[in-house]
Length: 316
Ligand SMILES: C[S@@+](CC[C@H](N)C(=O)[O-])C[C@H]1O[C@@H](n2cnc3c(N)ncnc32)[C@H](O)[C@@H]1O
Image (cartoon, rainbow, N blue to C red; front, side):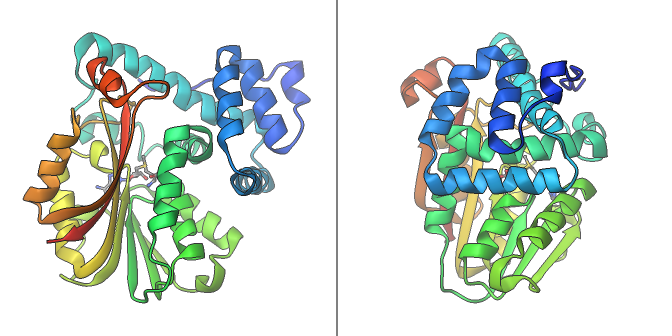
């Protein structure tokens, strides 16, 4: 079902330089069609974001991951997404709709999940919509409020690490159903130190719906790119609303008409998602809607092209 980019390294691949220049070379060498996209993405990044991407790649290399491997991680997501887009344009549905169809091959498959999460972390910089959501997150994160921060589905860990660096919470908890995600998040935070909160994080490998968390207990609830991965997103939103304190910062991202190998819940428009927030006791404070690159929102919707959305919410 899942198609990895298994191209063996060519002699050129063996000679890729380290760091971002090597990654760019490798991606462009293996997928020349991606050259223009990559150049545009790099041009959009600030100096600080470029440095952070370089630091992330250097960290991966220190962990023994080669540029060849990292470029395969990234290109697997590119290739898998394209394949699913073709399927979606034909059938107007995602390929799968149950957790049972994707759980074993994605979240509980260490080899694939590692590959997927390193690749996804790279898209946080290299895909302009993902970068826009990361910026939106960082810019709106309360910087000086104390209390407890919870992140559901940290995956690669980059958002959790960013929160630890920028936000002023007293403790940070991450809950993810995948052991691979938990391990990747832990390693990332340990490496980058988590700023002044280095000792204040706790990671649990659990299904968020199975957690018995007390009501009104978190000052921040963050859930990035999780709702489209679950069968009943309303249960995740209700649980988020239940455990959030009255003035909690609630940050949620998702996507519309955005097929991926493990997207099982299809949101067709913002109205559907926003009604769900309302039904689950959440109110929108701020929103970011990112149409498919190079199109307007109307064009994306008319052509069923992927749209990314991010929301800052509050409990009603
Ligand atoms: C696509 S990744 C998102 C990573 C990151 N939050 C981001 O925005 O890039 C989705 C994550 O949600 C986790 N996940 C899926 N279902 C879950 C559940 N029921 N409970 C907790 N985590 C879950 C997956 O294991 C994965 O790490």
